[in-house]
Length: 399
Image 1 (cartoon, rainbow, N blue to C red):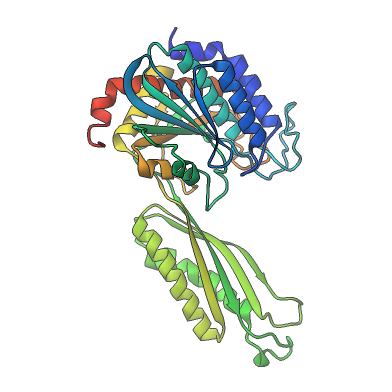
Image 2: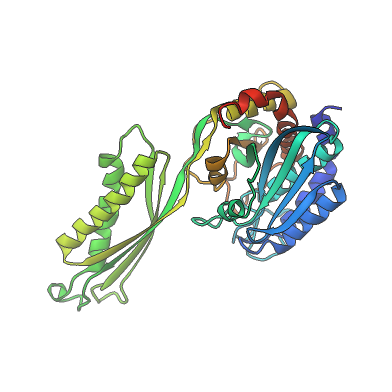
């Protein structure tokens, strides 16, 4: 049997496993029962050396092949979101206000499916496979990958791969590209302080709300007038709080926003210009201001050779035409920190059948087609099984 055929043979098991994870979602940093269920499944599969409590609730499991070769890491994130589910599924979330709206229940299941397929093919496996089940991917800007890396998740690893379900792609299609795939994500808070006064006597106060509004509009000139128009950047201010009453000049205004970039120089520019814009607004208005800029996830940048390897593997394992070209997304992923340390690639796998409504990630209605499960498991397993054959080419310049 091919890897795809073997994955198809366990499809019903994967479906039931995914539904179990879906019914019992846990938010970032609280994935204890999820991690315990992962461990039980790994013990049922057998053959894996298991470490628990890595980087919090993370689990690392390693399988040694019969022959020497590279160590391949396969990563799946485990956390859910604080969203009330509205899918109406019979296996809907039983944890009120929490939902696997980003599809991480699928990621866990695909990785466990890959683990089972690899254990079945241990005699064919050349090298070692390290399964990384990571907590807190949604906990931006901190994330969970950095802590797992600090605790040895990538020690001795030659290549690392990850995958994300993607509703914008047709079911089973695999989107991958060399270079930047997902953006760096930063969070900033601006505090502007003025002087409250009666609304009828604005001349006796300093209006922090007006200054805040000026900052919101002025910040957009960073995108339109300061950044290279050929280099992507998004600055969004999603929160503004000011004032205590309708007839009082606001003495304080607090804003929060995010900056998304691919190019490190544009990232630096955005931070610097936000500070300068704030300074200018405060000088003009008579307010004082403070910018707290927190750098979050790096951009997900795929190794060129590894991206090609994923593309070739997808077509080989799942059929010609499976791999498709994609444009980068301004969403973020802490898989970027793995790729900063080791060669590898991150891919998207489609979850929407033809003619179905495309519910976006983080939607309370997002319900990926379960046909993605066996396909994702087969691809992850195939990447690990095939790396040794391509090792000389793929890893020759990576030491």
